[in-house]
Amino acid sequence: MDIRELDLTAYSAAKPASPVDLLFIHDSAGGELMANPGRTIGESDILRSHPNGGGLRTLLSQNNYVTHEAAKGSKIAAGTNVCQWNRRFRDQMKRILATRHQDKLFSDGTRNRVVMFQSASSASWIEEEGTGPGNPDSWKKTVANYKAAYTALLNHFLKEPDTLFVALTAPPLVRPDSTKGIIGRILGKPDQASIEEVGKRIRSFNNWLKHFYSGWLSNYPLMNVVVFDYYDILTGDGVSNWLRYPSTIGRRDHPSAEGNALAAQRFVPFLNRAMNRMAEQKSPFFTGRPYLSADKAAAR
Image (cartoon, rainbow, N blue to C red; front, side):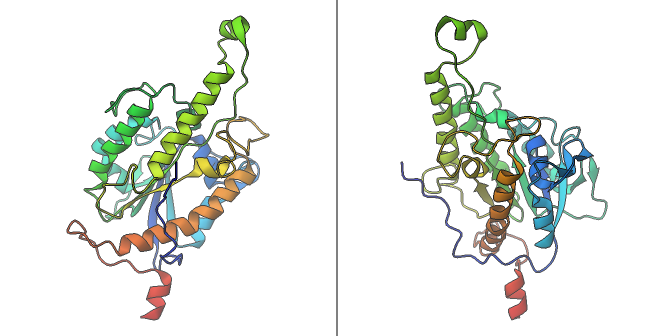
């Protein structure tokens, strides 16, 4: 299938002219993406440095984003399974927009103008196709339920037109080993055919997320939601359905520093362009002040 992603190349990659508060709700892999490379320093998956560090926090800071994080141990990141996002954004949007760090909130009326969110790599193991329309709050990992969950999110995002929501696809898994026949069944390991189907499912779902003309955002009227396909980058841009940059330290299903650095370097211009695109949204829902990128501000 020809995947037609949102083309942001027409928009400037210039950084914001003034500081922008940004929140990232993530699991442990997201913490490593944000961290600088180095020995492990930090806690609750919010890390200053890590051997798998991609340096995204530093890059965001250099581009005028004031980063905030919520991870393990916080109310708004108490589980990042796909089935938890709908209720999270529905019931805790006010807290999400006001989160400064974990459960600490802004006390001066500041709001996060960018909200990034990402599920853990375990979300990439989709068990079956399921039957539409799906249940957004179901723990059963089916393509139908995943699509229902993300579709439900748009109702919540529509109410916050001044905030850019960035969905990062879950990290890919390391391709699991398979064992044939009765030994495989005894050990509980999937066979070759099952593994291939799982890989195809997560690829298909992520393609649906980012397919701008017939996927998740095809009927969405605003410009305040985008998809960054972290999964695709770490599969070698589609060379495989599995992780091509596995960590050699700790959990192998986490990306390495090389993979995270590659994703981080691509993410920042993507985000800047998405911000500049949102500034141009012409919708009766949009009530915010015009947003200026650095190049437009300089031209004034």
